[in-house]
Amino acid sequence: MLFTRAQQDMKDFTLHNIHTVTTIDPASDNDTDLAEIGKAIGNARIVMLGEQDHGDAPSFLAKTRIIKYLHQKMGFDVLVLKAIFGH
Image (cartoon, rainbow, N blue to C red; front, side, top):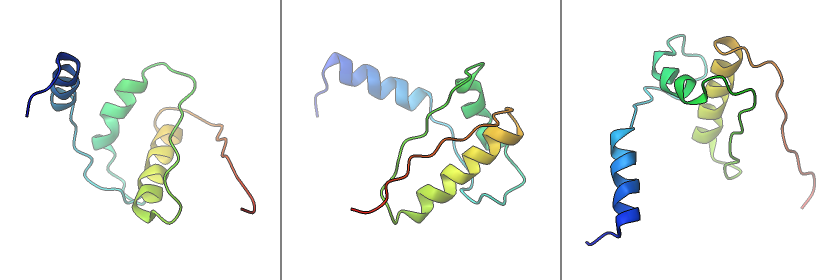
């Protein structure tokens, strides 16, 4: 498969910056695998986490773990959630 230069650059960047997340369990006490997320956030004061599909339990677990890390290790103390009621 042939890639455009932009596609190849994105592929190279992605492969070079892959970091393993060892668990999505929010009860995990070992958060060393999330340190790269912390580095990427740096001194930012606002972090936005995307919205997953409803019913996607693993994504909710992973997001919960990341929120816990942001609060306990990086000092974030305000959480804003989007809620839609009804259809």
